[in-house]
Amino acid sequence: MTDVAPLVAVRVWDLPIRVFHWTLTLAVVALVVTGKVGGNAMEWHFRCGYGVFALLLWRLLWGFSGSRWTRFASFPVRPSALARQLREDTSHAGHSPSGALSVFALLAALCAQVAAGLLSWDDIVQIGGPLNRHVSEAAASRALWFHKAVGQWLVIGLVLLHVSAVLFYLLARRLDLIRPMWHGDKRLADASLAAVDDAAMRWRALALFALSAAAVAVVVSLG
Image (cartoon, rainbow, N blue to C red; front, side):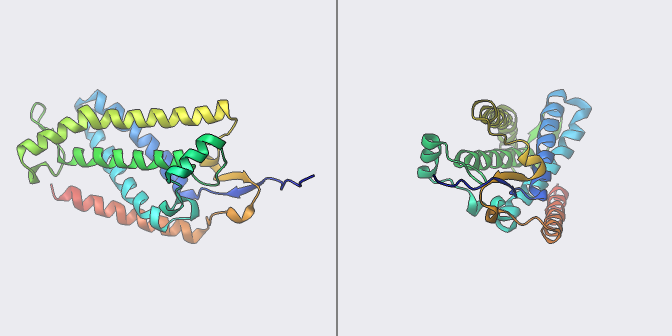
């Protein structure tokens, strides 16, 4: 009989990435709601947009300097890895291949949406992003079209797809992906797969977010 290693709680998601995940979730919901309400709510729409901008900058930095499973280098995005996941339903300490692709798709869509919002200008309500004065009127109009007609629906669609995948794994495969993103631990057989999540890591994350927020403030001030 082959011995099976017991499963133990292993830290996979560091605190900074968990805070990022849930903060971004709330910010995106707030963006959709304030964008649909319009009117005075647009002031909060812009504030939430700047917040998402800072979060995205931080995530890009964290993708190269964060803990083990948050770095982009650990994302198994090779076609062979995706095919193996779909065929064999293999387990993963960090992101699965489909999960990694989902992260990249959401980050790309949100970056495009933020960029379009910064450049857009709406002649009807006389409101727009802080950078619209640095592009032509036609470019600002195209940015607004993308922001309203393409970008928001792309983001909403990807979010719904992400939620559906999480529910599928929870209900069909009895794999809970929600709680690990809340408390940071997964039950794995190999404790050596643990990610660093100490005070130094958290202070570094805070410093990077301060840098990201400062960069956003500079960009906004250009308008």
